[in-house]
Image 1 (cartoon, one colour):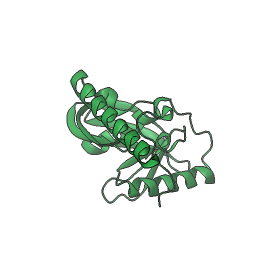
Image 2 (cartoon, one colour; image 1 turned 30 degrees about the vertical axis):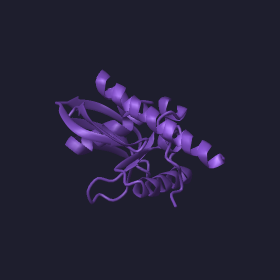
Image 3 (cartoon, rainbow, N blue to C red; image 1 turned 90 degrees about the horizontal axis):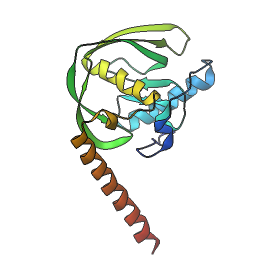
Image 4 (cartoon, helix red, strand yellow; image 1 turned 90 degrees about the vertical axis):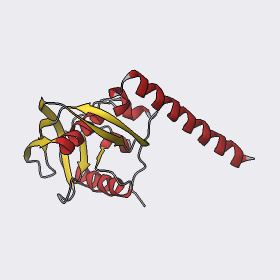
Length: 173
């Protein structure tokens, strides 16, 4: 069983900017390890700390055969080009949208050993970093949608919420 429950749309922690990690210690390493297990069980590529209710600037990810990775206090200092790619989010489950983002980014941050990391990334990997940094800034992919896409997404999220609340009421009888 996953160590954490992934927070979903509507949870206030997803709307707040996460605080910088001031010390990379055993607690941060354990958090990252548990987040990675949670991410894998949810079949995700990345997971930001706010998605598990921890308002700190770090995320875990795995791209290809890279194995588990953690980026602490990440910053994107270069963005270039543009591409559109279908993107989903563990905090907005089972909804996917074509999102336009820069195709190339340069990301800096720290690994779990406290070493500075500098990464040049393109396409899917660049999208992953941008998506996770958005979470750390309190922004969900829903905010990147055009007006019509956002309206459709909100209708679907309301429909799901009503169906879920209806199930709870029916099972209480």
